[in-house]
Length: 576
Image 1 (cartoon, rainbow, N blue to C red):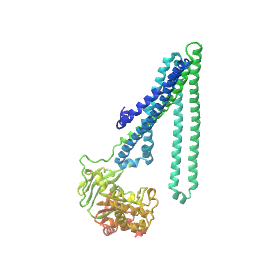
Image 2 (spheres, helix red, strand yellow; image 1 turned 90 degrees about the vertical axis):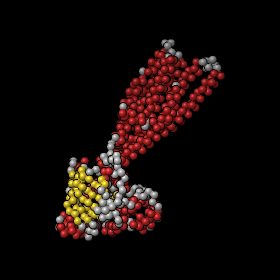
Image 3 (cartoon, one colour; image 1 turned 135 degrees about the horizontal axis):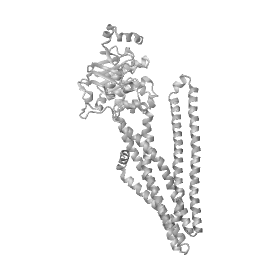
Image 4 (cartoon, one colour; image 1 turned 60 degrees about the vertical axis):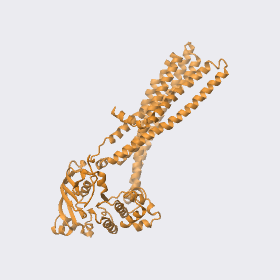
């Protein structure tokens, strides 16, 4: 019942369209059952009496019925589908808005393909049910009941005879129709698998060729292709059985009606015009039966899709603003971690940070170093409140980040990450993600700061150059510098440089390091370093081991201690 109420709630903003659709559908059903009665009257009265004027009137009424039905169908099909589209649009808007509020932990656990399926396939299925469900159910029931009321009025024995095939048709259609839909779903799964294989192979074409695995990919694709062929053949086999069987049932419906009518006429219980009228009514009743058969399957799919939709909508963000949360106003940008502990759900309670204490003075440049898995990236993720700490406090200028709005917190922090994400759009659009109203003059200035001006200026389309999916048309260093330009436009008081040069050559590293130096002046900067050569000039270096600060000091002080930092430095000093 709760699910039903939530579904009905989406009709409320479009109640006028729903009423229009249902009203026209009802009116169309009434019109559809009039034609056989008009034909019966024509056969019983005007034709035997050679009443040409009466015939003309009946013909005119028939034409008027057809015209009104055509108009009704136009209104029903157009505005009924628009009703479904608008409901789908509202649901998609709600779902996307809700997804924006969910914490990183949800996206860590949920595949992108699953989310996209909710946004596209599930919502389309719900929209189809929202439009066709009530309409099909109403038209089918109204037409069948209305037709049989008139049929019983004409001839009770003949109406009873014609009812015999109906339950068998419905049973056959629902059972075998469901089996056919199962085969269709198997085909869709096979299509999805073959698309995944093709997409992986195409996106990973460099890896495929570099490892000389073309034959492996070919064999893998062929296996998926064979599976698709087999599922389609099975689907067409089931389709042939379904359509042959339902076609036989349709013919049987006509046969039972004609044979029963012939016998009743022979025994004097019915008239010939009654039989002709009933034959016409069979053609009126059959389409609603098809609608009912399809409705049962469509309803099941719609309910399942809406359940998946509400399942996502019911997920509460793990991190929400406090009721009295205020806007963060950054002054010095002094950052303090006090006894902070944190563990990821997926790691069975294992502590990633444990009793972490560190202070980053405002306007300073600090580095966080440590072996892989020490918790370096987790620390800055906690600072941005992408994840919620288990205990302790994290403050900026003495204000706990839990007491400020997430939006203001995120505006205060700029990330330059190792794996830069660029949108499949132009350089201009990607830059304006940092400042949506930035002028071209500001964009070019940002590119100069990021040491990317000459490169972009030399492109035929300049700022309008498309970067490709995930920035595939740019090199790793160019993507990093574009990311730096984007952060420069954002102009946050706190900068985080997360191992952004670890996979680049020395020349690209030097350009990026220079660009970062340009944008970090006067800001609190945190550098997470893989190459220790990039952090020797930092004001302070925090050495992290198992989520805690093992050592702290500047480069020379830490070398003098001859501890963990010195050991890491000696291992990596060939990078200098």
